[in-house]
Image 1 (cartoon, helix red, strand yellow):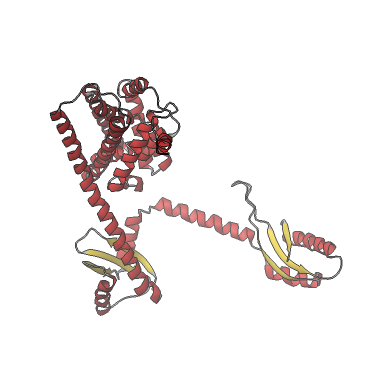
Image 2: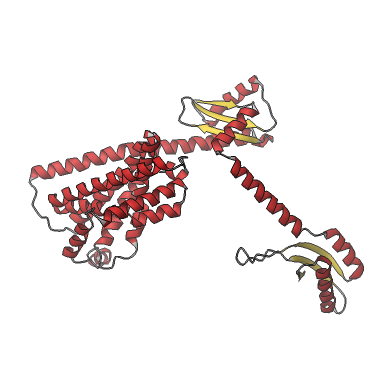
Length: 431
């Protein structure tokens, strides 16, 4: 039974011939000629995706990128103790990193759009979850590479581990002078590279047990093991701390939302501005209301209530100057005149559509009561019939009750009258 279970989950089943795997891994390490051009073009695509905040474009760039090659090569080299292959892999990874950073810096230096988008910000604060993604993505990658049937996992690994966006974000940080973005994004890139490499090393060395090119001495084993352990600590400790900070921020935000809901929203106050500054010392909760002005005593009372919600080291700031509030809202939302005009245009289109769809329901019901006394309980509405965006229609929907003889004939006459009356297609539904 135990042997059958082990056989069922064994990675040796369906394994590609090892000499061919090593040949494929070695051939994907080099960054010369076409690979450099492909990498540079992929970096530009990823930069455009980050610039316009398009997830689809970023995913496309990650699928094009050949960055995984030298990272996987380094993992195989460590697993087989092929130090020449390891040096080649690291050299080519360095070349790929420098080229990628240079192209990203050049792009963001000349790009007229330098606003920080959410896709950019997402790559500036790595945490322990990024470590998990990189490690398990690396496991999937090395398993797929060593199979006869490669299947779909390799493109998925390229997307999940996300090597290119952090490099582009690092280039953005340098180009615009936000060096905290650079360090955060480059740290994420380093995490991805390292843990993909480690996952590859563990599978190649301890599970598949590829033959070692040279037998390491006890001293070499100690040096390699110590270096890997040290690098793991360097990667894990900051990312664990950042994950802890993220968890604390989420908990804090939840408490603040509960405080605002119970103390203000439940009292019928309309909040028009809210900003939580978790990383200030003390933390601040900025809030403003539509038509309520609080006295200094009330302000102080609300600040004292914070401790009952376990909101420590925080100050509640109620903004009573609406000019300041409006300035903050506009600044944070980055709403320009073109966007406002676009919204006005959209509102006008919707108004025209509503006017077109409007019918005088009261007159229809009054006239139908006279012309069709056997029909009652009339309710008029709109039925949305969707095909594609062009063929969407809104016929008139009429619910009714009918009594007496010749109901079908009366209903047909009623429908014909409605179509002439409204000039529209009418759908009758008998209750």
